[in-house]
Length: 238
Image (cartoon, rainbow, N blue to C red):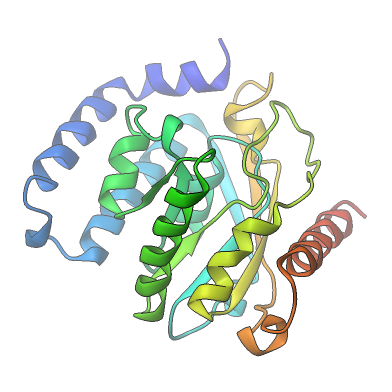
């Protein structure tokens, strides 16, 4: 039994409890603050990790901007990527994800709790609408996770695919800092043949202020962020 199904089996009673609790909370989301809802999402991650033997080591937390909104741009390895970031990111952060995958049980609850955005990948007009909404929220101080690779390969062995320039339109629209994030061994948790406990790593790299990339083309920004993440992953294994 692979880790994904093993984790579901171990936590089936918790899944039922948290799905029910989340759906009750989201009937009246105004009764719970953004921090309360985010903490509930993190509570799920902590209990899952403890029950299944997963651990995520965080490096570079001091690089996260202390004030204002920003966008985390990580490489993408699998289903554990967002939970791994939640595990290490203490303040509320939301995420943008593929609309088709967003309705899976627990994924839907996570997305609802943190007021995430569903993105139709093949609909550029809808994407602009989502980006405009997210940009307005980031200007007000919210934080988002956006995966510039778009998707991920199973068992990707820490390989970083080419970043899609369009994903950096959001940073340009929000005029906010970009925080590159290097995820390492995240694929081992749910998207590989690995069985049993796993340790993953989240590296928060130095933020890139808007002033540094405002005159650049999105393809140039994408290449810059991709290269910094690749360099950190290479450094980790040397």
